[in-house]
Length: 77
Image 1: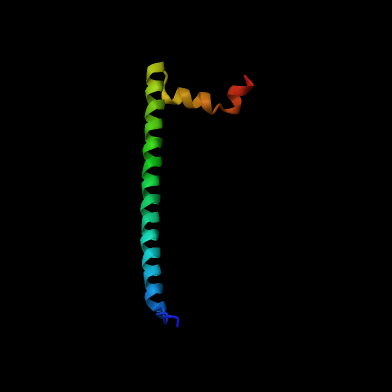
Image 2: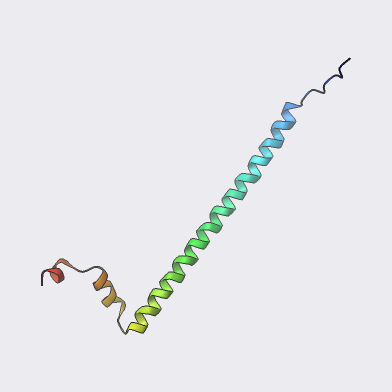
């Protein structure tokens, strides 16, 4: 004769799954925040590299900006 199967306590299992979902959502939020911090740090490092290169070149930030974003009058002449 086959053994009687123990019934599943659906409410308990649902609570366990809900707890796992909550933990994973928290992990995702933490990872997104870390990613944001890393992107900001990368941006700042890149800005520092650019600024150092500008300083070594003897040009000003305005000089470099005018080279990167020429006005229409500068192109005409």
